[in-house]
Length: 117
Image 1 (cartoon, rainbow, N blue to C red):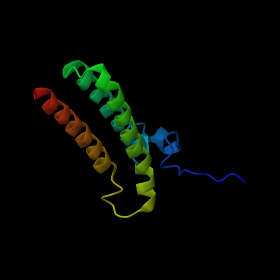
Image 2: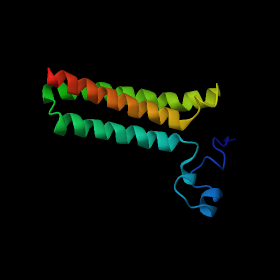
Image 3: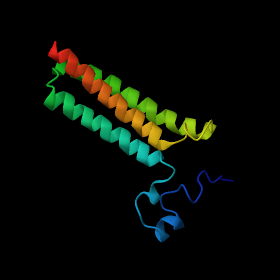
Image 4: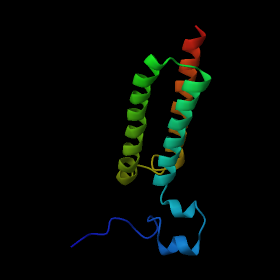
């Protein structure tokens, strides 16, 4: 027997989504929003490092592979953390999205300061 792994309120193509067609309602419990935020931040990081700060390619490629791993780790930790149900704060997708945005800004500032030297 196949066990259903999502509830109708989480699945993006549920009947609730058809009744309330707003995109925010159809994105589940923040998992998709968090993944999209992480992807957008990684994309912005690549654009800023490559085109605005002009980081040399010899340094850019190894570093961006590390950052892809870090962002993937955050993306994989988020579902684990929300299933643990520690507290409402830890389960909040806005907190996780803010951490990703903050991480991206810290990386950009780090490169900007190193280039300024």
